[in-house]
Length: 92
Length: 416
Ligand SMILES: Cc1cc2nc3c(=O)[nH]c(=O)nc-3n(C[C@H](O)[C@H](O)[C@H](O)COP(=O)(O)OP(=O)(O)OC[C@H]3O[C@@H](n4cnc5c(N)ncnc54)[C@H](O)[C@@H]3O)c2cc1C
Ligand SMILES: [Zn+2]
Image 1 (cartoon, chains in turn blue, yellow):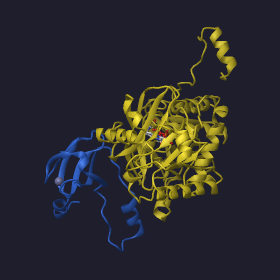
Image 2 (cartoon, protein in one colour):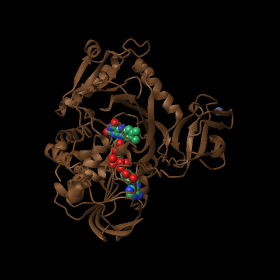
Image 3 (tube, chains in turn brown, green):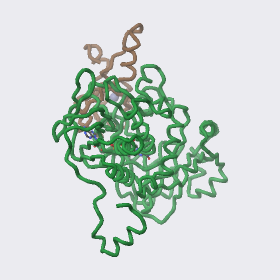
């Protein structure tokens, strides 16, 4: 993967400063949602070959949550966006 | 031809010109009773046991590349049965027992070397955790030994015992654990399966799974449509991709793990040693190279190559455990794509689709499982019934809340 990541707050930083939580496409269901819905949220992943949106955190920098769009085969990074900004726009 | 000392002498006398290829290169037939997708260790072992133990005849293994081009030829070859949880340990011990008779059974030298696997501990709580693990192994009838610092110093004098931050206090030893030659395991199963009439079809990528009335009827491949009665998926790191062809929803992410080998040295490391202060393990191959690896890179990946940051981290761990390693030159590094499951344990299971069976989620530990995985998967496919030692490894355990989480890390694949 790219050695340098462009954090929207800190600029270009080494990728080791970031921690990766994983798939940003799954959505937390309502507390009273069905067992099936919770199972899918907790366990099921689409695991695509290609574009993937992920939750990252810039732990050794601004400590903001980020959404990174990346290719799981070529390892190209397409975009790094502030997590809160993405959430406000209705994305995840 | 059966391999034996006699066959070696006989072929030597005729200039080694009469050896036959170890397996045929058949064209696919229009229909097979059972199709196995994936010609790695697990797919080949499954086909072999289907033919040998369960008497099935019309079987094919479809492999998109060449046999053994996946993880079976990329792993660090450690075999062991030192798991803790009751869902895992009987299964891995069944595998260990099969390893012990494998070479005779296959008539192939897999170079199984039961040199002992030692897990180091660095503090009292880690020692207690290993005592607990050792006792859990004993409860399943598997021997484990706790080594103190003095015993370890005698066996492994080159370790960094007085590390300021991570002193080495002792280790847990499974004497029967060790290594096996990974390629030879693939080739041995391939040859033995071929001799029982299994068609091993290489350069045949599965691109679609055809279904009728909720049951599979065959596969679309780069060599055309092939019909089948039953189908077993054993595609390791590509499990999600082939699963998607049948709309399976799977608790799996693909991640990359790297491994390394150094220049050849005289015998220096006699065991498999794992570090307790980080994820690092090392052994010495029969050619003399030190074979080692560490943690997965930590992000979803289908690329068979890793990140330099991880390379640096693994080297640091190695030198921290064995300072002398800093003098050795690394020859090669490589990566393999693994199917990390949500609880870190594997899946051998029915699926919601008729006649479709799943083998996957092996994470970074499936090489040691190869014989038992093949056996239990063959049992499941042939009898449509779960093998008793694989009964906890079903796909529905996630929805039912029966995860088998050795590490206690929760449903987070990059932490297992
Ligand atoms: C670096 C590394 C180190 C490891 N170290 C160890 C270790 O020390 N001990 C241990 O127990 N385990 C280890 N493992 C894990 C182990 O190698 C795997 O869990 C195991 O090999 C997976 O099963 P397999 O052999 O069947 O997989 P593979 O050999 O990967 O077989 C799967 C096959 O499916 C084929 N395939 C995929 N998609 C298709 C398709 N659409 N059509 C047709 N064919 C397809 C692939 O080409 C591949 O050949 C390690 C893994 C890696 C990457
Ligand atoms: Zn930042």
